[in-house]
Amino acid sequence: MNAIRLTRKPVVLVTSRVRIPPSALRFWVIGLRLKFSFTALAVLFSIIGIALLQILAMMAKPGAVSLNHIEDHEGETVVVDGVVCEYYFTERGETVIKLAGSGVIVPVVVETGRLDMSTGDRLEATGKIVKINNGFELQVARASLIKKTGTVVGKTIALETINAWKGEYIQTRGVVSDLEEKDFFVKARVFDPLSRYEVDWYIYEIDQRISIGSEVNFTTFIDGSRDEVSLQTYMIESISLEGFWESKELGIRRAFESLSSNRREFMFFPVNITGYVLYQPNPIFPSITLSDRVETGGRTLKVSVTDGSNISGMDRRDLVKVRGRLTENEKTFGLEMTSFFIELIEKAPTENINIDQIQESPYLYRDAKTGLKGFVGGMPDRKNIYGDLNITLTGYFILNESGHQVLRLGVNEQGIGIMGELESIFNTSSEKSIQIEIGGKLRFISETLSYVYEVSEISI
Image (cartoon, rainbow, N blue to C red; front, side, top):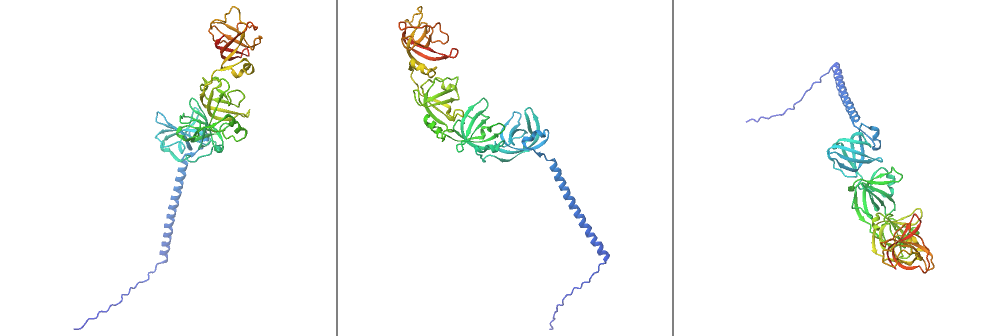
């Protein structure tokens, strides 16, 4: 059987070269050029269209206006930026925000919607500027036109540097050194314990947590529109209590030594000072003078009290403790104290005095309850001075039985001392002088520039 042998022949592809005519090639190139030209034009016009849309969008977007220039854009829709220093809600459902910035505070009224915000938040608001009775406000149609851009909380500014931040809303801290509650706000003083810088602080919401000595951290508006810079806080939410400075026990003499040595280590800190009341307190003039000695000749300190009722019921020589802040009188260069709390430690007994003491220092015993011994004379014969207290006693105290007149005495029929003109004035002699003991108060008569002893009890 014969075998069949297969052989594999290679396949050869034969291509023929096609010749393109020059005229066809020229038209083909021109077509390509036209195609690319139309594409480029389309891209160019697209870019120009986008740019025009951006320009139109920028022209339609409200412009940014500084808060201190809004009066120049009345009736316009603008964008403002500021920090929230106060906000509240009206019965009509509006949200009123007070934005601070550029040295002013501007009300922003949001007609619909509620915002999640806090004092110290920095906001950007878009609205229309409208003139109101006492200035201008920004009226915002809805809450979505306001966005939060930041916050001042956490950026604490030292009190001593606030002059560089006038008109701004910042966060700071200090210690309350003085406090006075008004009808609708609180006027306080706050100081920096390190630099000893002190400034007025107005709080426009009553906060019972704050007292003198409170260490506070708060956000506030720095008002630089007056001669002296002050701080203004509108909501108690902006205030946090960090601690309390306990009062230091201090003697009057040590306080003066601190002042004379220029250390002034107690000038801003609340202190407790104990002393004796030198002059009889008068609630009409809410101040007392303390002495470190019960008798005259000691170191004295004038103390102003915030409430005159605090000293009602106190008498000369009472031992008291006052809590407050020491200050230096710029005119006299002396030391004074502003007290916000007075405590009676020990009540003084009735002080027995004599004519010599009254002659030497009558102002010392003015209005104070005292006991007095002396001689009285020059009494009319028609008056009985030996019976009970239903007498009329008119005359002079005398220093001795020689008849020297030193002090006018007036007593009415009920035994109560009277002030004013006496019935008559008499000279007396030893034969007519009578020694008596009386209790009462020494009064000063401004009309006659003289002292009268107002008697409350008498014994002959």
